[in-house]
Length: 388
Length: 163
Image (cartoon, rainbow over all chains, first blue to last red; front, side):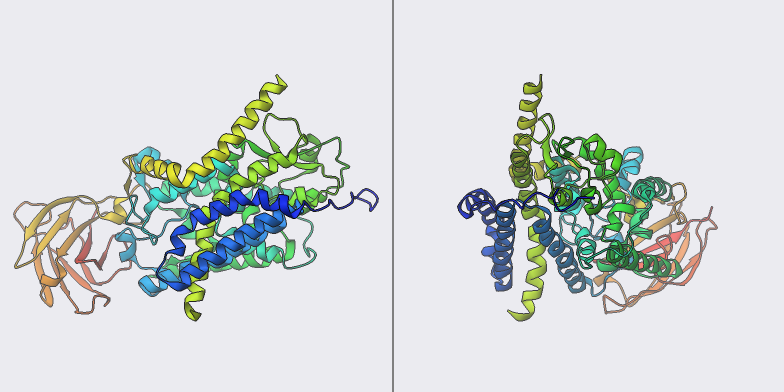
């Protein structure tokens, strides 16, 4: 454990003018991305667009000013997690009057498509050229009208840029549990069997095979906790009732109760098959988090702070994170010695780590504004519509 | 060597930032088009399979689809989809003999009411005149393989095919 003497003096904040200068590209990017929102005839949408731009720019400025990533990113991520259901449920209720997907909507190919089933659809698509999801491939289908190809396009573009960082800068579900995990000051459940870390891989393998065998998106049909706050299979029969019961229990357990008890993102760390699949792309991303072994004590504060158990004593000794690391920056912020650093593959560890952090953040925040920002603005506009 | 890998690393990082800038203007559209052009299709359990032929009735048409069979452990039976369209041309009560396999003999007798409220739940009776097709009594929309629903301007009936 780190003693007080070992803890470095808090770093002086970066000057306001330099922080502003570093934030300028992001401010311009935000204005470009939201230019359409400002021209909307609906006033609540205009205001939502302005609030979102200001919110995203201020958060980036604070990241620059304080040298800290995690605590500011968390504000964005929680806002994304909370406001996505607001906008989505509102849209669903307006369009069909219920959160349950009626069978005729599935037949019409109007089931909204999120990114989670992407890995489950690969085998049936590769073997039979068939998409086992009741949506539409081309634009015109889905709740947004974008179709599955559009969601897949967004996913691939963001994945190329941030890899597993998707789970910290783009996923519109993880924010709820991150918010829950940040509520208690201390974890009640501290001892977690490290074998739970293999949970997402087990779920991914099981659901991929089941999706092929049952020819349906098995995870969406049976296990997705976020069905409880988005949409679910309309309970046409007993099976439907059981499915919806599972969604609610998993949501209450993995997204609400366990994050409150453990201060971890338990659904992401122990269950999410998409997270496991996305881990593969950690190997293709140039950005990573490394541990400078020369500076490391090791006090394991980084290990304790990691919301997805992506650091072990062995990995710390090797100077790296596990492949499940989602680039949230919690360990970097937690390290009192500045030994956990952002890193660009091929460069020396801990040489100009701030340059690596800046390059990663420019890429990740640009994506966050483009994708998550519009979701936040949509949720805000829904709320503002009541008042404006 | 170390210099070279460092330069490659920074080049990669620079290209990644560049990709982020290009994503909304070029990459996203490019990947979307790429996925669209893979020639994938939605599972026929949802779409109902391709159309085989259309039979003209009094002012409306009955579209007959190719029978759809379940894959591996799929939890549905084989079925054939029949579409009545347009809904606006249908009488208040539809009662039709349908020759599904095109041998000149009717295979099923389908009857259902067409309520004016487009959101009203539909119920169908299917009398089997050919043992290949299963009868249905007062069926609504409990299963993909045995149902009657209204989708846009079509009333769609799925008749289970006996094994």
